[in-house]
Image (cartoon, rainbow, N blue to C red; front, side, top):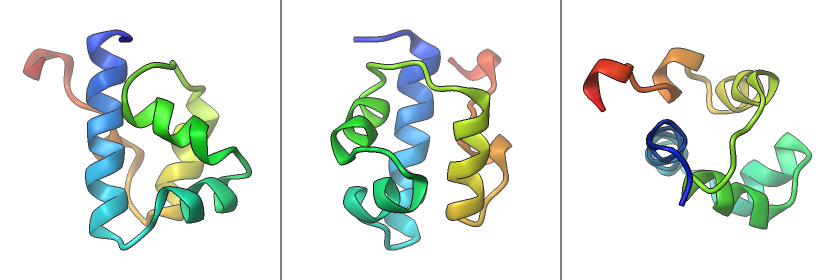
Length: 74
């Protein structure tokens, strides 16, 4: 697996994605990435760019900070 930070981000992304009714396929399509890559992100296996965090936040209609866990909570 990846780092604790990547794993926490992935959990947050999955939770918000599901709460907004997005499938991995739809989120991937709208973000311009492969569905399997979204799965890797949600499992914390990859470290994504800051730009992609903002893309996800815009697509999911949330703040980028909603996707990022405070390091003090890890």
